[in-house]
Length: 552
Ligand code: NAP
Image (cartoon, rainbow, N blue to C red):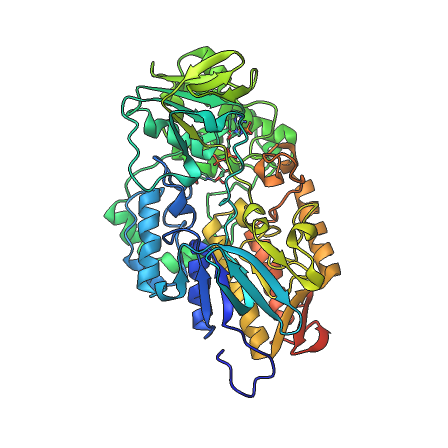
């Protein structure tokens, strides 16, 4: 998309600026290059990898199988990369993403250690001016946010945190230099996916590990193992077919969903089904029946099954009971995969501290004060989660039409059309943004689909001489309504989860992802493309077209 002297509209320094060099940003760069876009990626970290660059805590790994949690866009890439384990570990994922950056020669267009701080849309040129913390300012037609849904840690608002004299660590920004916990008294606050992974991975080195638990999670059994050469060869022979098949499933992965309701089977059949799936491991147990996320009674059958697994592992009944989740539907908060987490509590040197009954009072120079009991620690690990889905977007001072800020636009929660764009912020595109399936799916599938769709929209627009892609406010309202309706028909709203912003004090409670599943979303977005992008306002040069259907 190189400009020629006869181009009517100014083209800016770049055709596109992409923010972030994780799974999203790397693929966006690859795609945009393919369309001939002059692209610059800005990445705050000193390396590529996004989530997998930052979350390098011991035990970090994806809970989607490596053969799904990886790019599908290039068959040679998936044929040549050897995943060693069923669930890929953080070091292997980071190596993989670095390999992708090298293999496709992406690095020349990625500027590391550069955080985008502000972006302002110029209504006279239809260009974004993007400002960074290094003092640079560049202009670009499009601004693509590949900033990640779980990339900004929520503020650890513990009183006295700064006074802690031991080593303070955070799972989501783990040091790049080795951390030696040998012989230390270690505390972990938080028992979501990160906490559940870090505990069994630090306890061997630590002299003593204390786990501060407020809400016990529901857990499924993580069945990690090495991938055998035979398995690898078998998969490689049908990889493209396997990937296409995954996209026909609601979570973008074939985790063997059942097609019956809990009410279609006897209690004995149900128990047998749950047991078989439990034996296989992974999230398959959570999708055994179709009504689990829509009926409280159905949900309770799964909740009961998962609760009953805990005392089978945890020997001390009091600890087992404390670890048992109650009071919210299973799945309304993300189900964690546990690999050795419950078993950790059978050790004398691992202790569960209930901070639900008596909350953490403050952090002291020596440790954690719970009520009036001080737990002395040499190292404290915060696994306290993220300002999910909107955190990274709202950290940037983004100003659209009429100088409106995105913070103003999203004051009552994020709104978008199809999860890709928000009205009044032309040429701003989200990868796997709020209002798209994103975090409810195998996120790599969500990222690939979203990136492919967005970049095609951009390319179609440019080919048609369109300089401004905005969203029709009514179409946005209808999409948001649809997202809310789909969520309201589920039990998702009943968990005080990060899905609805409940983990961040003051954040509007809005269910942010689209719960309709990958196939429905693909069908809808494909139809929008096929019909010439209804719901988008496509403007050529300075002409106000307000068109629905001018792009190819
Ligand atoms: P999280 O699920 O939000 O968990 C945060 C934990 O910190 C919760 O247990 C929370 O308790 C606790 N906490 C926060 N403030 C607290 C306080 N003042 N006192 C006591 N406890 C407090 O965060 P996460 O574990 O980092 O996981 C976030 C998401 O990242 C996951 O759901 C998943 O999508 C993704 N992730 C995935 C993997 C994987 O694939 N295996 C690994 C890591 C992360 P409350 O629940 O009571 O607030």
